[in-house]
Image 1: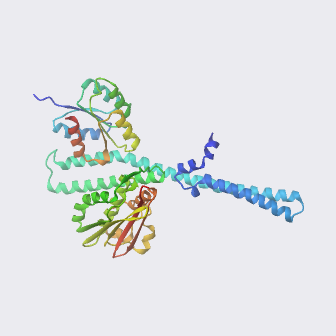
Image 2: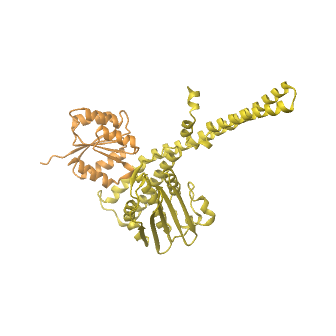
Image 3: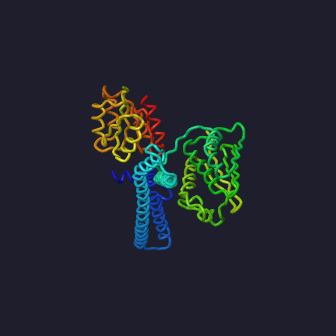
Length: 313
Length: 124
């Protein structure tokens, strides 16, 4: 049974959430083919240059044996690595789930106290309740992001496919963000081409991506902020971009920007919040929706993030 | 005299039991608590509440089973049930709605005030 199961290579790879070329079972198959090829080659070369057939057979046998042992060692360590990776994702998932209950108890208890339903609170106490609330919200966000990351890594992030209008969704999000933008002295400009086709993706997840990009743009603004959002059609895709005049991403940090837990050095200096997971999650969502995401940025001038998503054909 | 509406809260987290009791009693409801699925089901039958708030991960009998038995019993099947849980996968949501839950609320996505509004709406 186990052998049969192991022969189902795509299923095995899916279990580890790995692409085919990183997957132990697939690599083992490739190695097997190489061994067979090398054996045949050494046989051919052997018969041509060596006259004694027994020596040829012996050489072929020895070479094959060495290759087989090497291959087994290598794929075994791959297997162990993949298993460790899967266990790590599972661990994150379990811990995050376990954290959610106490966190919602905490958040709701704070909310009840702040509502004044249990009696008036002193002004000085209000400040501390706000600190409690802010920090419990931060933990909640972190746990939410960690859960998404563990889903991405264990290939359990399921995306729905539905048709929707990217510009309508963007309008909605901008409206939600208006108070935050205003409080940060930041203006949002939105323009889009007329009669854009609908895109074909998971509306809820794409909303997370746009919210994340917009949140970053506002959060890392310096002085008076100006954010420009543009949407245009591009053959079989719809192209979205968001330009800001914020702090920008230092050149040496740019290649790490989509990595998990990475936060740019200039951002760390004066902003403590943020999980460092937003862009990693955004990239995974966009790519799994059949799209692409990227950016260009200059430190001190601003950043433009863009993504494009396929339309329904 | 106005009759107080009864809410049965089936939830194993006593911190949440206290929070909801404090807030909903002030709103003029009578609160009944159950800390596990079995006693929740028993109280639903004996107390005939006007609304049930139900967690899904529960000791003794899980929320899905409780919901199923509530909806199978003539005496309790008309009582609206609000599911209040941290399970947010699509299968759980579809399963609970399919079993007859009135509303499905994921704890992490709502403020206390929003949950209270949903309760008030459902009990009317």
